[in-house]
Figure 1 (cartoon, rainbow, N blue to C red):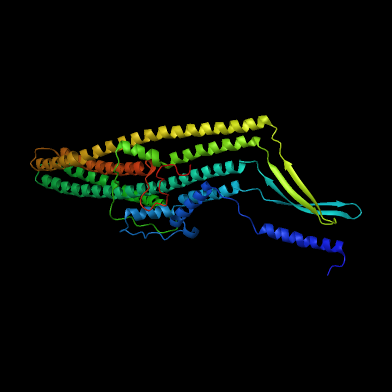
Figure 2: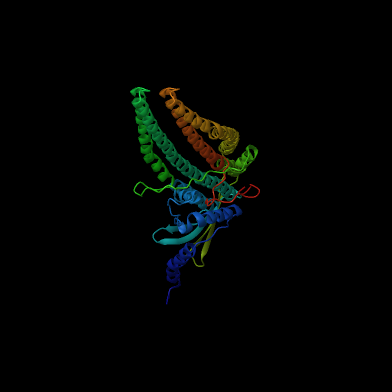
Length: 461
């Protein structure tokens, strides 16, 4: 029991301070805005597929029987570049809460001391940014988080493209090796024919040596192709996000070609509606608009209010406090607004440049696709069949002594070149289709951990 009222009041001071600190440390929650709530829903939706409970989900098993879709899902979920872009996006969403929140309140303490302590005045002070400033900051952070999301989506699509490119190159390497081995076997047969012709005196040993030279060159080419498999396997492994100390993944045994059911006009419209780089730049324009709004709020003063209580006074004396900033530096305010406006113009110019570039990319890739498709049809339907027939005619003519061995070898080499050109055209066609669908049109493959496009393409505005 406290007998002296003044001492009792003085002793209650630590208790009051503890209670005040406890009340503040219990925490308060600010008012979220619609953009922030939508951004958090988006992160939660993607996280449920991509990083549930901040952990990598169960990945598809990689075997020779794996489908291309399963391999793509593995790459998109396991690629470190995609993970880095995802957490950059998640961090930017948390920044919305930081930017729209009030500054932390401040505990204050003031005391008058002469020979003894005259006053003891604990207090509390809170800063309040000018009206509209927190909203403008939240809008800028929301637009920035939207741009980060589209950077993440770009990383997902790029990982899918890298996987497809490695997958196609690895598959068609096997095709080139197979064709060269067939040609090597064919040359061995031609050497036997040349030896038989030489034994009966119809030709010289020059034909036999010529066949052996062609075989040696082709065997070396096969060895080079087989060695190149190591680098292609390394690219395929890297596209899957596997580290160097992990075992090499098996490549799928069955080849799955790419399908693209869009004409040039539809492709361009889809690219303008879905291309993630374009969407990121649109978000940067909205961020620049929010920066302009923030700069204009520089004219608005900020406020601070507080209250102190003299714990030694009887009765207790309260001292309210209030401060207000004076935004008097007109040149500074004008410069901030001009800087923000220039930033918007730069963002708009980058967006326009990207739109122009996207139009050109669609036109060029569409032409590449049409060209390689025509070349492939020419090779498959005409050149390769005719070259095969020409070789048969040349073989018969050589046996009959009507043509020399150089013409026979030339017919064999022509068939080999056309077959390799066919494989190269098929490789180019698949890669161009992957670039058109993934990077340019922005159409994600099945299982991609991305948000569905908004029906009106205005999500996040």
